[in-house]
Length: 134
Image (cartoon, rainbow, N blue to C red; front, side, top):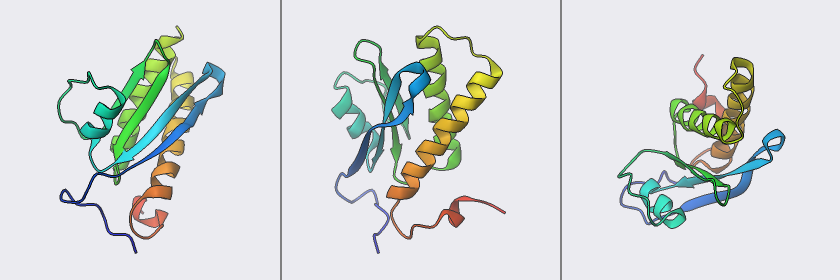
C-alpha cells in the first residue's frame, strides 16, 4: 500500500495534460497533483511570485496553457475553489457572461473531472467512500 506523502518525502507530482477539456470553449486544462504546490508552480511559471499557497490555478492567455495544481489529498472545498477560478477565468477569457446556468454546468463538470483525477491518483486505498459524508 502506498503511504501518504509527508512534508519530509521527496518531491513527487502527477500531471494529466489536457485532462479537463472544455470542448465548447476550445480550451483544455492540465491537472497537477503534487507534494509541493509552489515547486510545481515554479516549474510551470518560473516568474511566479504569489508566495506559498495550498493550491493554485494558472492561465497563460498567450499560450492558452492552463493548470490546476493541487496537493495529493485536497478536500472537496479546495477542488471546488480552484475549479471556480478556472471556470470564471475561462468564461471571461472567451467573453462569455457569467450566467448562472452556464457557470453551474461548467463548474459541476470541472469538479467531477478533477475529483476523478484525484481519486485515481490518491495515496492509499482507492475508495471513494472516504470522500463522501453520509
